[in-house]
Length: 149
Image 1: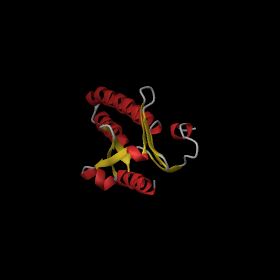
Image 2: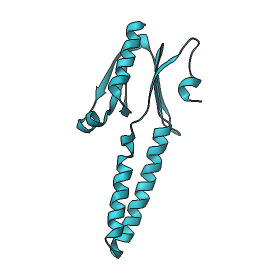
Image 3: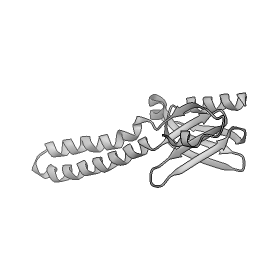
Image 4: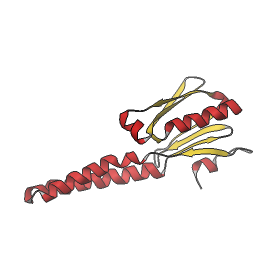
């Protein structure tokens, strides 16, 4: 069972879910491509290529763990976010306490539909979460629930 389902209140329903975007795997793929090019360049490149393969594997495992352990959800009562496996960061804000959700997208983020969201709650809390899949849709769902609330 997921973190979001485990922490639902009575009468609370999940209305929208999101996850990290697949773009978090770009750097491991780039390192792997560099490793292949380095290995294919000859004997001297094999040592460097082996190092690049190790970097790609470590980064790939880290990205995979982040991808599988991150959850973003909107319920009929709250915004719930959880990222991390060993070092966990979670955010649960009641809809009536949400002041706004800021979306930041660069050029690549706009093309591939990922970006960062910053949830602003009353009391000055501002928590950024990066590389979210379709952050504009996440913000729209939160705004729809705030309006319906």
